[in-house]
Length: 293
Image (cartoon, rainbow, N blue to C red; front, side, top):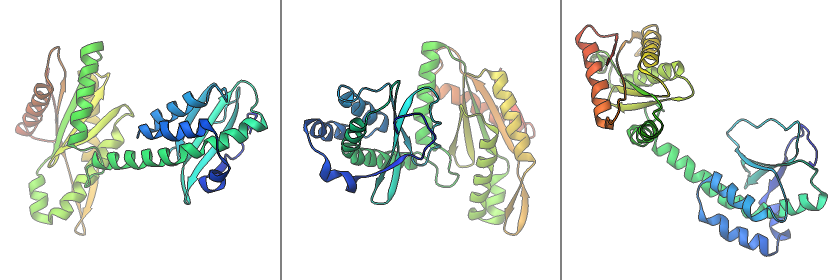
């Protein structure tokens, strides 16, 4: 545990350590860590409280549903997998330039008692918040998430002049799909389109269900030309797929409008320009991309 290695992290369960823990530092941690429901802030508070007793260079927490971090090749580290009532919460990683002593490792394990429940509560809150911001039909971000995210990106544009482009698109003749095959099949088509469009995006792009059969993609640090390229990639990918509904294979197309934000432009104005180009695409034949030059 005190030297760089690829060993499996030690499993830490609250039941195994709670009765062994004590001292004023633990008591202070139990109080301080209850003040936040953000895992990043909880780890910051934890690190701030223990650093005078156990010096370290890096402190990280990796959720159980996130990929593990590679072991350091230059620093000594210790890892603890936090478990509570059989549920794996994640792994706490501490690193520094010299080895951890046996006494320090024992102290760390005792102090982790204070971390278990705040981390569990924060993870439950984050999961609930994530669910509240997801569209239940498509699994992508919903309109509430869109409003928050777009406001942040516009604030960044205003402050740093980073380019910002949006793509608005919807499914052509979607009402006919619902009328012919039913709304359950319509939901299947919505989910398939959302999945295929998401597969076309970069990790920095964020896709949302805007409403009904409309979707919006926000592209940070992207000018209009880059938005047009992505929109065309989405259009082609969806045109090439077939969706299985009611024992049939249904072909689907989308129409897309693209707009880049301009100086002093409001969120509503940016979305209105993208929406106008979307309807221009529909009015001129559908299954096409129309940018706002």
